[in-house]
View 1 (cartoon, rainbow, N blue to C red):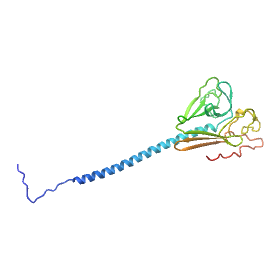
View 2: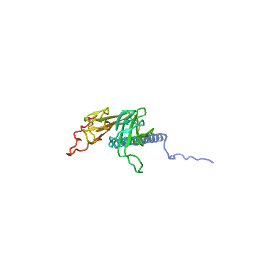
View 3: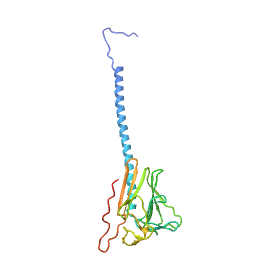
View 4: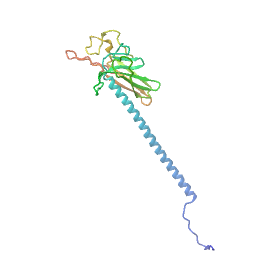
Amino acid sequence: MKCTVVPGKYFKQNGFTLLELLIAIALFSIVSIAAFRLFDTVANTKQATEKSLTRINQLQRALLIIEKDLSQITPRPIRNELGDKQPAFIANKDGFLIEFSKAGWRNPSYAKRSNIQRVAYIFEASDGQLIRQYWLALDRPGEIKPKQQVLIEKLQNVSVRFLDQDRKWKTEWSTPASSQQVQGLPGGGQKQDPNKKVPLGIEITLTDPRYGQVNKIIMGITIPQPDQQGSSNTQGLPKPPQT
């Protein structure tokens, strides 16, 4: 078979040149990289937002439980495992940040127990855990192990301040050694059991690595009953200084 070439006639080629292909590949690469970076940025932003919201929810939940406990503190001393009388409210003792008696322990099953519960808070600095402990019996005959609940982890610090009966904020809490006039209790001005002394207010501060110091102030924990004239000495509580 012979191939005949007709002089003076040219055949048109359909397709791209090498330069055109290189330019198209370069443009496609640029668009792909930009799209990938945009997708990666959106994904990272979503992940950071979810992580931030999760942490905020953890802090809010912990503070809600703390507020519920502290707002129901009641001046009820207890007996420990050795039968010794313990104050209604204790701070910075036996490894506990605070330990206290609180009312409002619901009893839907009508078990034979008090509606007052003994609660303690512990801060484990090694892993940043804030732990809530509670006992199933208010007065603890024998060895009764408390139940534990980890409220939040990865905290840098937890600190507590107390509003005493002199309307002053203090970082330490002490119980009078003997019976004396304990202000802030029902019937204030009369001799009361010093073991029933509880603070008028509490400020708890959680130090978070991301959000810094997050504090909660619970005021009016112990509200004096009005006297016969209908007056009350609940007025005049100072506002805590800004930290």
